Length: 297
Length: 297
Image (cartoon, each protein chain N blue to C red):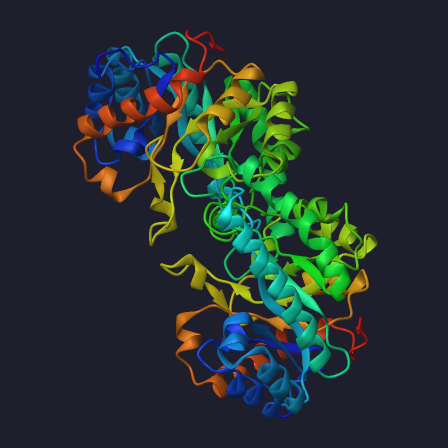
């Protein structure tokens, strides 16, 4: 790379999954990238105060915490435990957003959860998500944190997320203040949606886009479909059109590259980051506004 | 099985993929099933006239031919060849529907095709489907054949079908006479759709349901996601609610069980048919009207 990476590029830590937090921060900053999205397990591995300290010292912005959610649990101790865990995730998000460089976003990515064990009732599972949001939104509001509902690709609807489209995520967000409940637009999950342009436009009008994540789709899918994400440009996602649409409706926050892929995880983190920059610069950056201007906090 | 299979059950030949046509007809009829959906390769393997003769002799209804489509080819010789092939498929459908028992349906299942090689332009691919339908609808109308657009699960959008939702299929069908262009509702492809109930109701109002196909979704998906279909009842599809919705809007045709699954293909065809009956009787049949009353032809 001869040029600096785009200043809105953020490395989602999942892309370099095996790097502990200190290393993840270092390889990201050393590559000239300005922002990072963190995962709770790596934060908890060093403790929240230590993670906050490391983040501040890195000079990086914090673009999101992955993740809360997994709400599709019937009422009872397991659900209470899930809700408690989400409250902790909200606190972590607030703390990390404060610790990150100016322009950090207090965004907690929420994955809904799949069907409860043994259940075929997807409508029921979706209503459990509604209930959980109603319970957590005031907590998030008090903490200054934005819950970002992430629609996942419909191939994950049974076992991971009963929120499958951007339109559905926006419907779920609708009762709440957009500063408290937003949505994630992740190219991998939504590129196929015939209603995508209309729903991105709607998300813009309703001021709901809390995070824009990019990675590519390539066939054949990997044997484990969870690990089928690729560097931008390696597959068939039309980053020009989706990025332009997200940009047009006013999103100016960081753009995370989040890749789950065993081969990429087996790459040295600095190499994976360099390849991420390459893919981002050619596939995504040309369609982004030149300067970061998205500070919510 | 102590009771006879439901009289609207149809075996889609893909479920017993390795049985040649004569054997497929025999195991289906011998199991007391009244209807079969055929695949073009097995018909062509014996010739259309011979296939028609065998079908008539079997006494079975013909519920559909799989499949036409694969329209996402830029204009040129390859597209002309695809269109010619679709014209032949229309002729085959008409001939087989005439050869089947009373109540046979002259339905040609259409799979749209994925992105053209090297393309990222899904909107462009979708407009190729529109153009192809405009070209083929008069041919189908003249032959008394109904083209049945099948939305495939979004995990196949890149490499198999750029029609991903029932709503999108209905939009594509809208310009045409419902007797000429309909849609397929296949539980495996649509069960996850948050808009499913509304779109089934719309499909009923617009008289577009040409075929209802059932099989189950189970996680983890098979390494080859094409082969992840299961017997009804083996997974998480809510056949009660989807079947009731399809029934409520007036569909009274045959209900095909179409399964792509290597383990099931490796089962003796008569055994696979017996297991299909078991699954259908417990998961689907209780939600179906008792008698076949769907003859379009």
